[in-house]
Image (cartoon, rainbow, N blue to C red; front, side, top):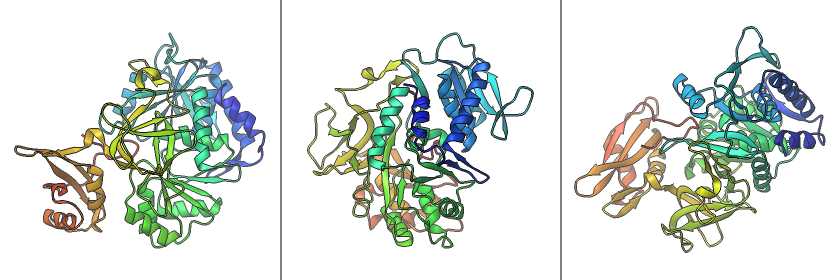
Length: 469
């Protein structure tokens, strides 16, 4: 079934409830569905039909949500394109997918109206065949973050999206009585997040900017119940002493990157709310979340959701005993349908039915999962394994450090040593020995950074993760 049609059916249960809260206006579910159908009719008149590859580029906005829904109603394969991409990155994505048409804001003759804004539909490539013809009922193409390698186009079908949002909400438990304070880049989180909220009737609260004060004001003004954020937003809220309340927010979830334990404690002290970490991955969805033990074990990503299975495997894909570090493997509903290029179906990627995430993890006897690092970024020092994330967590705990990236440097005797790039907070004055001394009290000797480079900024992926080399 077309996912737009399913959302429309479900929206009939709560037609007059708010679907999107923006700074200028609030749209009900009836208004959002009607707007999406008007735009879809216009797109069809312009040749956007089943199998058309439709790129949609905009910032976080009601118009972006409406355009995405409209593309799905047409039967197009929608490709969200983040507005923060460089021109070169944007062009590479368009060419790599072979997008047939691009919908983006622009003036000129024949403009398509979405709300009060004007959009243009540009022809990019001839529609000689369907996008992703190897995937039945393809709906979305989303690219992986590419933290340690080439970004891959992940294809999701309509049925996969429905499976995914239904499975994820067994952990989130959202309903038409919820309102989500939204601060993440929408183009990277449309599935599961935005689709899930619409599917279950929760309102999306769009913040005009992502300062701590703006987040708090949005939460209070629109009676938010969930803040879905990244570690950066958690840091901003803790650092801004003028923000003392998040109003009716009762749950805070952090995703995209690991969250330092000390920051979780500071947030709980300030706002009386624990921060739950969530493990999301575009090939799987949201299979793990820490809703049960976020107070006691904030550093973990939690337990597998009811419909998902987690395994920790060795290199031969044999299960490891609890407490061992190994390959994180997942399976359950909503697994991706395949990769775009080269065209590969899901079954050719899975190994013994498992999707291998590329992460190294550990699981306790009661199923609590901790992410230890990426397999590709692990540092091997004369046989001793070091996870960059562990060292980064310590360096980032220094009050005068803003961020860090740890990686393996070559060494004639040991093979590799620990190196670190460090970004200091504005006005801070530290030298390498200050960092090493701080780490020496908290890390084993072989984990200590041997080379430290002070830099102005770190290379990041478009989704806000530290880019690994």
